[in-house]
Image 1: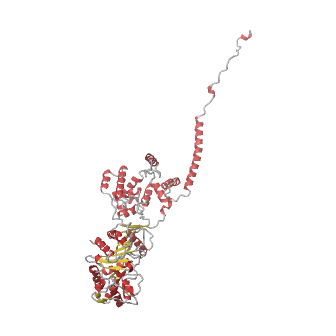
Image 2 (image 1 turned 45 degrees about the horizontal axis):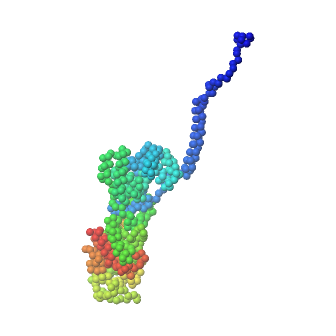
Length: 611
């Protein structure tokens, strides 16, 4: 009865109730954020340490960009022909730096349009440009576009090698960032424009302006600016002196990019394309003129000392004369080889001794030995000039008679070329026909020492021995010395000093040397010179030099023993020219005489330069 009393709780039976799901609590948001921040910090610290290690590794031996202002470079020399054309260069040709504000606005715009359109927007590395180049290269399946900025190009060209490696690229990026930190954008662009290589051995836009257009960069036109900017892609390939049409086409592409960049109106670009730039004059330094360039460079220290600054040298060489000489010798190559004459040289002088043309050999690339100035060879009968000048100076006349017959001096018996004797002849006839016996007799009458003295007065510097064979040109001389002596006769007996340098100045225009005089003095009287001129004309009109026959021409042939050397030296109008044929080893030619091929070549050259 008691189990049912009121208030008594009945014991429950069956399965217990499941626990409540609210018993497990979630991680608070603030704790998640805290943990994320912690690990981010850890990763950042370790990442920074790793990055610092990488940077330290690649930057350990980086060059100091501060050295930009103190970098040493060898002086460069630019040689200009008489017409202002660039004749040649020596060393790296730089120029005085030009401020950005002094440049024509079209030039930096042309450079930026082709090399780095976003130059003023990036911080040394244009990541957009890198991505764009990567996509284009990927689509093309080859490298068609680079991503280097102007700052990166500066870093690479001024401080790094051309090595292609990941390490060099990292160093390039680091240097670019450093340069951007160290210099302003305008400063970087100025440095770039004054240091970039633009072909032909020239560095910087000022040097390139002089090299290609003969003017300061400040005076460049729009087409000229576009052509210089176009060189940056491939300086050698797009050089206007190498392929003018290709250079003009490339300049047209630069103009199009300037339009696309908003720096040029379409109408301006069209006008510039209609009047493309052309280099000033003709660059002839790659041909035989290199002999002349070397000859001039050897003389620079005697005028201004050892070059310690960039120099510009105005020279006497005339491109038209030089090219005529090269063409003349080249056209005779096959004929010369047939007669075993493998080498040739040519000199042309103006009335004051200015060297107008100089060719020292057949091929400068194969041999830089200058046969016009360095080779001492036997002049043969061309030396008789000094014999007859000494005689005329001693009172002999062209009409004086001598006997052409066998003669013996100290056991030596000279022979005439044809082996014959003509008997009684005048000095004019003997000189025109190059009779050896008369020249020897005349030397004995005048005196060997007097002949040597005359040769010295007219510029012959080699060893001259007073031997019996002196009159026949057995002593050695150079083509330049011999041609200069003949030029002195052409100029009324005034001794000339051959020269190639007219003026030397530095890049600032300061003149360091300027030629003032040309004549050393009077070696022979005008009367003696006139009489000698009469004899020289007789050689061309009816003597051994008939193959050189031109109205008003005068000259002399020369052939050394066993046909080892063949010469013709002569003048017409205001030009004196000398031509030599022979072989470097002094091996004989196949009966080549001065009155043959050399005389014909002389005539061809003179017709070309004096039509």
